[in-house]
Image (cartoon, rainbow, N blue to C red; front, side):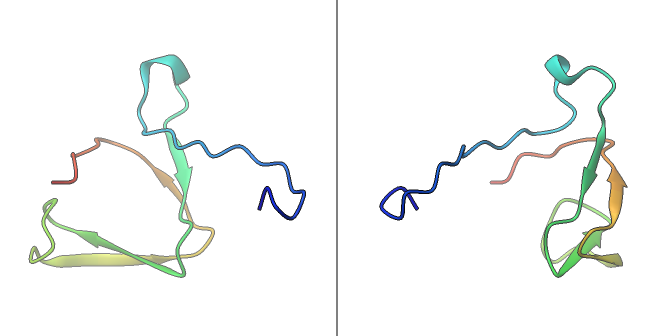
Amino acid sequence: MKESGLNFEDEIEILPAKKLGDKIYGVVNLSVANFRSKPDHPAELVTQAILGTPVKIYKIFPII
């Protein structure tokens, strides 16, 4: 992108972050996001959300 002359900032913020205070909402940025019963790929698929769906972040689990 820089070679094309486009300016951008590559930044990811994991929620909830203390510096964000009460900003505990996010937006699904995948065409379809899977929500599972546990933070594990083989866990039961609870529901799905489509691109643009607002979500409330309750807890972040580390990706191993």
